[in-house]
Amino acid sequence: MIKYTQMAICKVITVPNPVLRQKSQPVEKIDKKALSIIRDLQDTLKIQKNPRGVGLSAPQIGISKRIFVLEIEKKCLTVINPEIISLSKKTIADALPQEKKFLEGCLSVPGLWGFVNRPYQIKVSFMDKTGAKVVKDFSGKEACYFLHEYDHLDGILFIDRILKQKGKIYQIEKDSEGKEELVEIELA
Image (cartoon, rainbow, N blue to C red):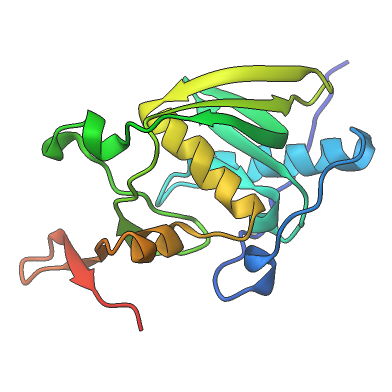
């Protein structure tokens, strides 16, 4: 017998929804409700196309819990109740040449992009979806992806980081020939 499972797609909430600014609550136990949130996050992340997402946190689907999923090496990593053990002093700006730096975007802040100078290497601990404790090191883009989602659990958006670092924020616009280009904008 073939078992069909229906995907659970949620709406990704966007600014100024107040849930995005709340500090999320820890997951007390991994029960049916927690597993349902994880499945919703995985299914919702999977269908994001333009732009494609690499991570999604529970607050982004309106649930104030400390859970997120990350696509790392074509696998979906589940992160529950994460804690930062250490952050390198070396940052992305220190480690990567100018042409290799990348812009962050966010499904909850559609249409805006910018460079966030985050730590280049991190060591973290979290629970996986079975409840097992995981301790893991990330570097480069993967460290940035992790920290971006971690920030969501504390009500922090990537644009907050850019503004604090006095960085530039961009949006995509079409030029006179219809080609997309990044244009710097000012946030009020």
